[in-house]
Amino acid sequence: MGDEELTVTEELTVVEDAEEAEQAEEDDEGEADEEPEEEEPGYFDVTIQGTDSPVTEGDDLTVDAYVENTGDEETTQQVELTDVDGNSQDSQEVTLAGGDATEISLIWSTEEGDAGSGDVTVASDDTSDAASVTVEEAEEEAEDPGFEIRFDPSTPAVDEWITCELEPNETLEARVEEYQWDIDGDGEVDETTDEPTLEWRYTEPGDWTLIVTAILEDGSTVSETQTVTVEEE
Image 1: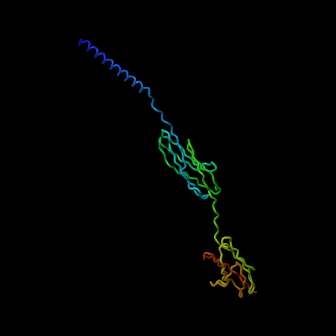
Image 2: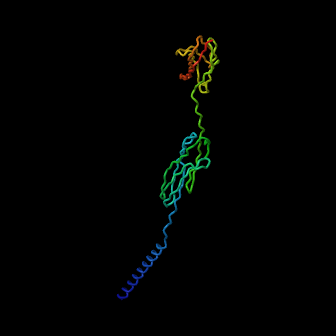
Image 3: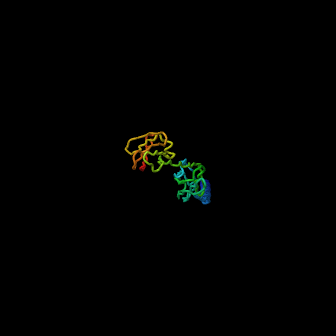
């Protein structure tokens, strides 16, 4: 009787061990069937963060961009800036490991004739982004204020009346308040006029120095000097 009970116990133990071994074998087979995940190739996602628009033609337009490698593999690509006409203006070589990102700045060196508005584009091999910009026309630089002296006759005689007319440029004409005339070159103002014209005569022959000074609205002055040769009668 005691021997039969011992035999039953041994059989139960063997069955349990067999079940555990079978389960372990199935687990090992399942692990062996799992394949490693493949890495995604590099993929550059480009976003324009901002520009310094508007600029004046002849100045640099800066475009700031954010570049992110959303893939797994380290990758190198050229990131390029094109202008509103689609012309390439700048590029940078960017290398990023998977999941990394960087910020770059690209430059469009504008020139005369580039004035206008449109979209600039920053592109990688995979994506692109655009932003609206404006290039303003450069203002013409105003010439310095000045004038020329004309008088008639060009070689007057003693006691002959001289008519002198000044020819101011546009810059001076828009800003002049009055003209001061020193007709004998002694440093003293002989006449003051609002208009750029004066008549006078010399009573003696010789070379006389004529100095005309334009007084501008801001208090600055512009002077011209010319020699007047007076002949004997």
